[in-house]
Image (tube, rainbow, N blue to C red; front, side, top):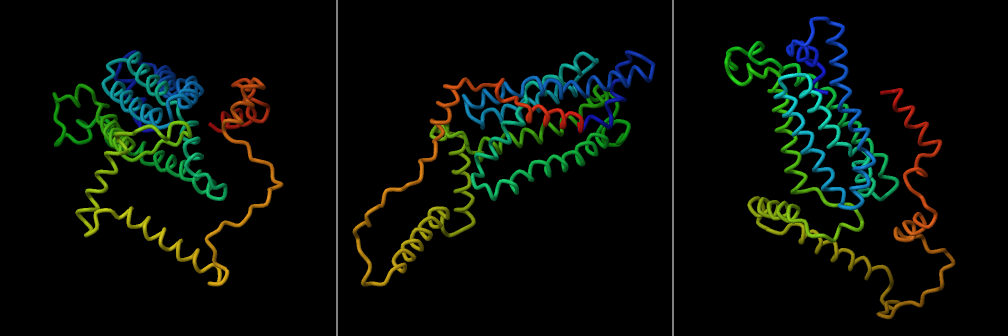
Length: 292
């Protein structure tokens, strides 16, 4: 989004043509290279997230986007600019992985609509701030001559600054993800996460400095357990309390299929990518394509 305000002037600065119509065509190619590459690798990143986990794929997408913006900012010609945009799309085709992560975080059906509204809200916010940031920071030697002087790197690469700022923001996002993002894949949750452990250690240090108690989460859990114990004691009168468990009646409900059962059934019936693209899914993709 941040390249939209200045991509025309960037293509013009490459001096590959003086025809305004040709410049518009090249600008469209640069703009669509990201979306095409992202579309090409979306299924691949989804499959990879099932093997290695959601967190590594999401962090790789952020890091890849930051790398592509640096390549784009330092682009001296059109091929390098196209390469930078395509690189960002190839390394960031994880929209489906992000939606899956949200679904795995919020398991309660009644809370999922509220959780899913966060993503489009953040996207709209980025669509507002991104172009404004890109247009304000492009060609800084012309827009802010008293701060950015001629002959510097920002004069040689006049469109580097907005991409550099975005790369720094993405680097902060990667750092936050390493420290605080938890793995949501059911089979990968048990793995040791050094980054998450470091983040919890840092939070414990901050809480220790700001509160006389150094273990607020443990105190919170202890209070919850004590409260639950009191509630359990108050559920029945003293004469009806017993330490023996009540006999359980056989349930007539069918056991809900587990994740392993679903995966086994899918493998038995040969369900794959081809089966996933049914008529309703194809119509949804076409509808999104028309809106885009």
